Length: 162
Image (tube, rainbow, N blue to C red; front, side, top):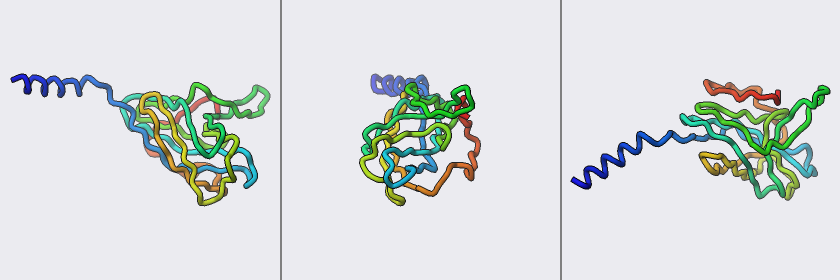
């Protein structure tokens, strides 16, 4: 009797808990402006197929002295300026963050060595709900953006970053 009650209680608890974010990363790549550059960036599509919104609150990588979340904002004079986004980026339930050149991205500052085509960079993305997600990001020095990607049914995050 006690065992049945415990099992029923545990099953009922499963219906009470919120559905957590289910994070997947697609189409990731990293690049630097030149082999001797001291900084680089990583771009990707981050999907949340869960029923609960989350927030990307940080990133880290052993490839650089500092890793930050950045975006580009208009300074009011028509000039786009790159800025560190300390609060991170909202990731809606059943939605997506598009990290691309000229917009949101992971900035790698103080690279420990050159970014060479064909190598990979390990980046840990930290989410408020989902925790850490480790991504192996290939270095592609030729690629420009996600313009050829079809985004399916995901919700594109739009902000003031253009």
